Length: 592
Image (cartoon, rainbow, N blue to C red; front, side, top):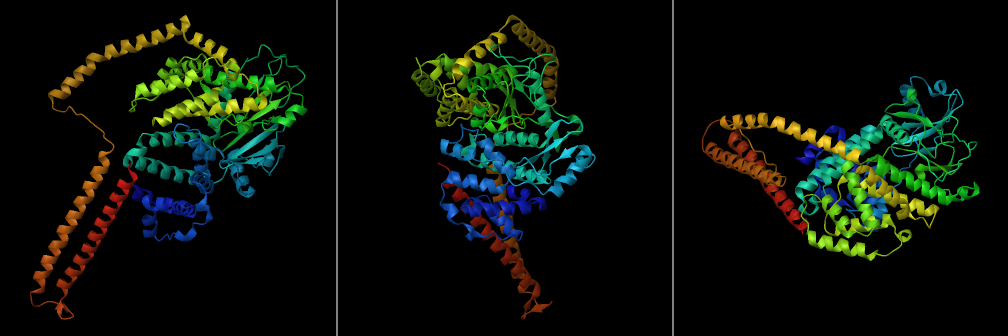
């Protein structure tokens, strides 16, 4: 049923391409088990099973990563999301997924030109005073060109690759159905919540296709940093730079977010201010420019911590490629295609978790992690004891020596050893925090991340429990209780009325019963075919004894025709039973 749904004509070509890549990298057995081979060959798509070469000799993580690179933008993005799932994969897999680079050859400029003309309402040379057809960078989804406005402002034009949405939509249908098949048919992998992971991935990728949404994220984060200042900073007013957002008659902003030009921004194109700064990877240029690496590290850490703990909306991929350093030790963030959101409850949990790690309170850490495990089966005593042992290992260690990113990764490894996974909304936080610490320590190897985080976490906690905040939450809770109580009589009346009429229904959804239902459905179909075949044989035997009528080879024609149909039905029945037995055998082998 799964692959019948996938065999729509729009997906056949893409599925053939994916299957061929998997075979070339030594995953032919996976193609067979997933049913791709039979489905594609029935539609006349030949698969070359001898394509596997020395690529199959690579280690599995490397093979998977290289196959994802060839399968295109959707799978590159999926790999980048999986690189955040330290709760699902061992370090060697995370390392390979992290190597997936979102860069490729640019699209042909005539195609880009045509699409830009449609989106801008006029050719690029009429909209901009200057437009460079050679892109600054090209990724799997978009490419970026430099341009200049009529007023002399330098901008970058981000263009979605022509035709990329159709490819991604086909891939997303394939990945979603695959996740459903894994979760309903494999008890070993079900607890990893693949459908939820893929659902989150689908939402993230579709948001990334919409450049207008990306620009709205940028403006929200810029608004959160309005008026943001560092009490120890002294930024000379004459050290402005393109991209700086300055208050009138005041110093430039310490945290810079590119300005969006909405008159030319839409779903497939966005125009933003050009940031003329030092790329985050070029530490030698930072030294040559005379910038203070320690100050940059501290400001970057405080900015991201503010986004996470205070604002609840944060840049989910703060790697050096998305960061620029500006004169005055200022920092610019670009590319808000991937952002993380944290509810008030999640922020409260994270603050308690980080405080528990910094202040060596294992019970606090254990309580938060147990809340995150949800309703899964877990040995709470064993998990709590392991967490306490882990936190006790760092007892007495100076704050400066604590590596919070590494500690979070180790905690998640403990969850993974207990076959527990994080809620999907937390994986971006873990990824962002680990990237943040890595980038901060590149700038300043002696960065005291825990020391920087502790005052902000305590302040955020005080704000959460300030009288005004408590009163607001109390009022909200009272309103909810009041609404619930006012609706209770009506709800009870409806329930009793339905019971009196015999229309009270109880719906229970048990996922693994679908597999049993499919088996019963297949067995019933084979039984019906068997009865029909037997009936045709009996009827044809009777016809063979009746004289008269047309003949073939001296035998009654309709009797022979009946035996032919009965033979075809019998062969189909034997093959169907054989395939079913083989599939059941393979299913049992995959189970522990």
